[in-house]
Length: 453
Image (tube, helix red, strand yellow):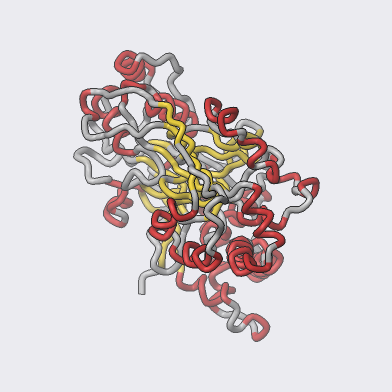
């Protein structure tokens, strides 16, 4: 007999005057069969859908669609968090026992999530997962679970972007009270860039906002994982998921090669940069290679309820003078990619040696990073016979790193931030107002883009 799968729904609440267009969707866990969800999967990941179609899984094998509102913590220091009201009703810990309380394997159906490390008062963005991307596909490799590497236990994940901030200053205590008044919130004004997320989360989850932004995940329970690991009929699907995880690790597997090239550049130009700036430049290499996350202007609601936040800060907070540009995590995707940015005011490098005792300022740091880039690109543009044809030597001469500050550089090596909107229209986000060229994020930032032909 075919099992009948049902929904358990918990409704949230209604709207704020300037949010009429936002229709609320209930927070829910839905148990479905493959046939019930295949069209949605095919819409975001047709290759995965075709592989599952080839298997023709038993209709009695359940899958779980789970929704989370913006800002919800899905993974906290390696521990997965199902919606509290749903866990007992669906016996979710038992259904996902293979994960042993950790991150399950699945697929993002709608919205996005951000994986990050949090420690020492800092946030380290790791990866953004958008619709069609697989969640923890490399978890298929982990059996038994005792072999889970320790770094995985340090990861956390939010529904939507965690590493998101405005370019204009939004820390004014008086204007912040306007937000608190209009939304009935009690939360301090953010003092640092990534503290803004706490306010964004509170705004999005408050019933008065009418925000319907959610991430929807399709999760594979233990019954699917057992077949993926042991059933030969499922081998093609299992191999596809593992191949995807393997391809994502390409930069990490070749990291010694990149460090070798960087050392060659330093020796060739006899550069003696501080350990701190060396770590920063290596992180820029990882961003430019598409491995680590940079930042880009938010131009839609894919990673967060951006339009809602911009409206709230323009109408309630009183952000009238400046364009409400939001920066969010972004991957540099290659030669056709839009530019991404890294800010010295928002350090997210995974390695961070302490600064030396020598006094320096942000302009000096930018000049040193510029010198490292010129040296590294020179090595890439004129590779030795040993390196001929290496992908990095083909890629890097096609990239450009530009360095910006809001103050004039007496040496003329660093560009002024007021030039940025003319070169990246996304920073203006189709809004009226003046671009905030003195925003904290911009006071010492690096733009990674395709080199002009």
